[in-house]
Structures are given as C-alpha cells and as structure tokens.
Image 1 (cartoon, one colour):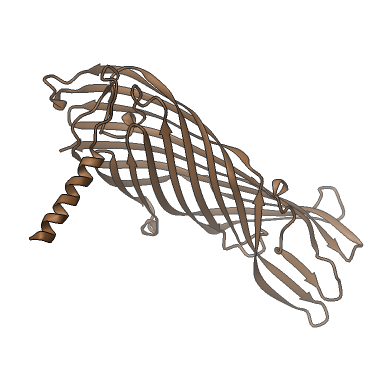
Image 2 (cartoon, helix red, strand yellow):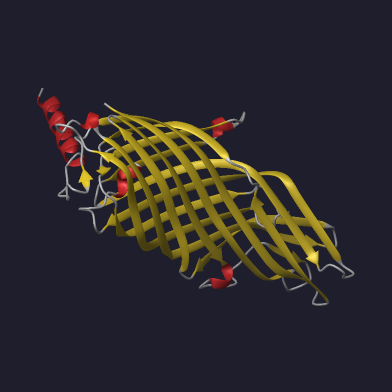
Length: 372
C-alpha cells in the first residue's frame, strides 16, 4: 500500500508539473485545463540528399583525368499514418509508412515536452529510397571520356534529431497554439525565439565504388534564432470558463536561421589495391572523418489550427535545410578512402578529392485531436 501510494504521489506531481499554468496575459492567451488527448496523424514527407565530388585520376603521373561523381536520393514522397497521445504539453507519436509492400521496415517515433516558455522534441525515423549515382571520367570532347550511371540500387537513411526552443515573449505569444491542444492564442501576436538542433543522419548507399562512396554520415549541432507569429483568424472565448465552447482558427509562420557550430561529416568507402602482375585487387573499407567550419542553415515552418471545443485539427508544413562541404573543413583533404593504389606506383590514383552536399527534409502533417 505504501509503495502504491508513493507511485500515485509521483504521478500527481508529474501531472501538476506538466499541466502547470503559466503567468500570461489573458487578453492574448487562454490556457484550458490540462487533459489527456489522442490524435490520428497523416504525413507526407520527402527527404532529399545530394552529394557532388570532384577529383583527378592520376595514372603514373603521365595521364591526369578530371572526374566527378554525383549521388542523390530519388524524388519520392513518403506517406505515413500514425497516432499521438498526450497530456498537456507532453506527447508521444508513432508513424508507419503506407503504400509499399516493404513499408513495415520504416517507422518513425517522437517524444516531446513543450510549454509557453520552452520546448524540446526528440524524433527518429528510417526510410529507403532509390539512389541515383553517376561518375564521369574525363571531359566531353576529349579522347578519353566515359560516363557511368546506376539508378537501381537502394539506400537506407536513418535520422535522429533533438530540437529545442525558447520563446522570449511568452506572456502574450503561444508558439504551441498551432501544434498542441494545451493552449489557445486569442489575439494576434509574435515573438523572437532561440532555437537549437542536434541532428545525426546516416545514408548507406550499398553501391561500392560505382557512386565513389559507400555511405555518408553527418552530425550537426546548430544554434540560432528567428521570429514566429500567430495570426488569429477567428476566436470565440469560452463561455462560463467551459473549454467545450471555445472556437478558434490560428495561422502560424516561423523562420529560424541557425549556425551549425558542430558540422561533422564521415564518409565510408573502399581502398583498392591493384596488383598488375597477377591481375588481382583487394578492397578494404575505410572511414574518413571531416570536421567542417560553422555554416549557416535554415529551419522553418508554417501551420494552421482549428479548435472546436474538445476537437482540434491542425496542418503543418516544416522545412529543414543543412549543407556540408569538405572544402570548408578544418582538416581539409582528410580522405583515407576512396583510394586506388597500384603496385609499383607510390601515388594515389584518386587525388584532389573534394565533396559538397545538402541534406533537406520537408514534411506536411495533418492531425485530428480529441481532448478527453
């Protein structure tokens, strides 16, 4: 009995903390009593990855051929359905991809806590898509010129991100009004914000040397700030403090430029040693770790929400855009692989290698929520 009572006490303490009301200007913000909620969600998502590498092929210092390699994800939109459960500003979401026979391999999880001052959300997803790669050796019009393209291989993307924010003008502006049922914006207002993001992404192309690299990974830690505004299109206040009588339509737009203070890239590729005498070659997988200088990137979103008593609907569009480049690296030129070594020749066939790329992700989410 004592242990059960202690557990109940902790549960009540947690509910009090999560559902704690903040000191706000009630002319601008209405805070309903915290309740449990359940939502059905639908998502359309596109994850883009593009990398461009240029290098020289040097054969015994006698023949030098300028070359390039390009790899990118196919233009495919992923459709997902799922659910979200929450209490106050606390939420847990689960999504699964639909529309393909192998969709059972791709899931997305998220967990978040947010209030009027600050919020944080951690999310993880996996996906698979066609990798389109090409390699060009030499230049058009030259005696030696060849172009190879491969588009029937699949790559697996894994992504883990942790987002956080802080709202300066939280007494009059409710950043969560268009993505959470725990607060309602009564009058149009906006605020400057601070934003942070930690992101780890890994793309395994399974392409061997055709796409030059076997896999890419990046780690980004970004800090920045911007502005967010809620435009209240229609609001009817609660009657007799009964939140079942609330009616509200609010539109939000947020733009958050950030600087990636930690900008790390890892490439995985084969080092190949060729023995011309017995016509054999050996391959060894190697990693190259590249630390790039800070770089500007972008996060942004726009959303609209409709509240009718205990029923809440919102749709949100989010965009994240992150660059990487070895030419901006602190340890520029730090590539252990890909490499081609020929027995009897001291130099590396692949020289002056530089790589540039972008990773972007846009998501359109629709959510129908019921507050119990």
